[in-house]
Image (cartoon, rainbow, N blue to C red; front, side, top):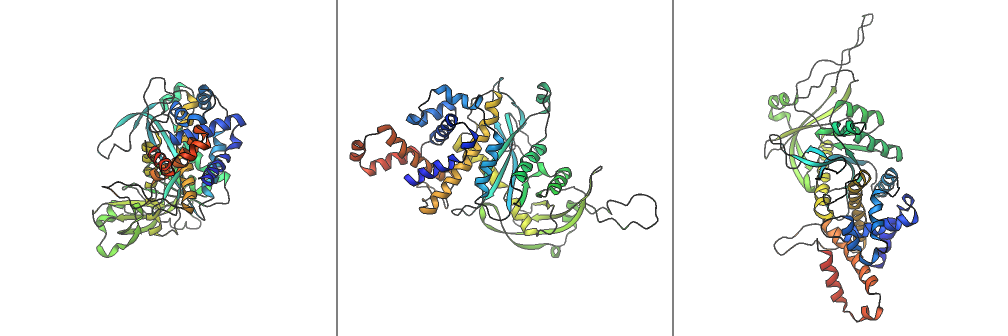
Length: 447
């Protein structure tokens, strides 16, 4: 327990350059309170959960969000450095946006957005809240069969009408994603990155930007998207500019309808949840063109699920990447959706009650960063004695999940907090160890 607490202290100490010494102490207390707090992650809830560790006046902890001065880009860099240290070779970045529901007339930046979780192709759900564009790193932890998406940064997307009211520049989700990726490329120029996004990050402009900055893009592409062949050589002596593109290729829907059984390739790929699945695919290359922009060569892949008959087209800006690699890379994108869901359920992502601009822009990125810190801590803990998955009599988990990670770190913190509150070695010496273990286990599994 002592070594685990020391590692947690060392992990949090990496962020000391962000703050002054008093503010750093406040930061450490809030982090521990956020880990221990059940349910809502309001500042008051964090202070209550921290108990005797919160020795300052309660207003100090509230001012940490709204008035304390610290650079969020430096926090982004320090957190990314911790994550990239455990990722060898090529780094797979995941980008997506999620809506964090918020209500209240005075909540800064609140707007009405399409809920991607409850909506479908034929049914749209609009909700009130904030839309966060999040960048995460796909990490294969040693105790799981699937990749975990560890968030390193998030930016708030505001609707154009709200930006006009405050005379702020309006940025689309793609532009916010560009900012996050560019910062990471600038901070770590020696690493090679692959950016994986869903259909919201598939535009030709975004693909050209990724190619320009040296970051490969893997994304979904429109089923009716148009690709072109290479242009024919420009005859010498003929007037006019050389052609940018050649003949139009059949769109993906036409390719699927015209494909014969022998045209499909079949094989096993790593699918969702890390399991192997047999799929079929078609693959090829083509030029993607948009008026006013240069052409870009891509490799496309049409994936067919033999069990359901559903198919989807994907593409990569790296034409020498194999079809299997493109499919498996895009599948990783779902890990970020799992992270959003677990952050809502176990870290109270939608439970904040602040409304000022500074507090709003800091709370959600910090809670997502807390998800990453807990995962890094749990990775270290599992190197010595990995715990067993916590299930129930009617449900047995096959592998460890984030809830197990949160319970494990809570047990260490509760043990330290009990010692801090009691403070009498004679009392602790008379307490049966099994009783202390039972109490900390039940406290850790609450909320």
